[in-house]
Image (cartoon, rainbow, N blue to C red; front, side, top):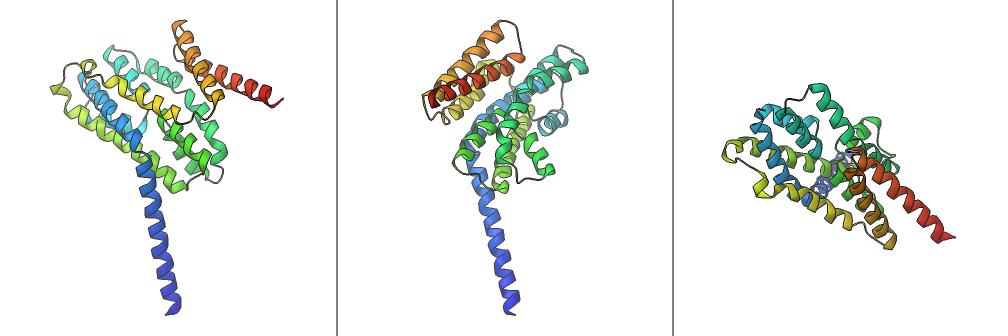
Length: 243
């Protein structure tokens, strides 16, 4: 009897711990959710306007889950671009995810391959920024991190559904200013990581490089190039300061 009682107590404690981790992850995702919902609604509206149905738009948010790539893909669908062109463009736009996943990988060594694959799938610009800030303080449990990612994606899917359903009511989403919500949220998340002058210098250099490369016609490669320039500069500055 005593053994059974201890097992039940341990099981209850484990359930409470899991529930607490999930709630922490969901709560941590709040700033992302507030930025995702309006943009996802805009995506849903645009998707409906180019002829995508609810299931098609929702499937894109479930299996692709890449805000900028989805918006670009919808625009290309509206222009009649081929499937191959859309896939290749999406690949180029999302190349930066390789860099983000690599940056987080040292903190995820305890995860299995399946868990790493799932985590990597749900990495976005915003979840990367938030994880980078949180991991630097203390690495949370895997369940908490997955709850954060899952909450972010569910909010994106939910916003997509709302946008598709409201597609016929809105003629032009540009007038709503929704396209500014995502960049504004990401800027706020990036500022949370600024701990010294070096971070500000590298951040300013990265942003300036991205703008220059984009204006020079590098397209999606401008983000990759700016990241490499900023990261290299950060290493050089750090080594110079340690001498």
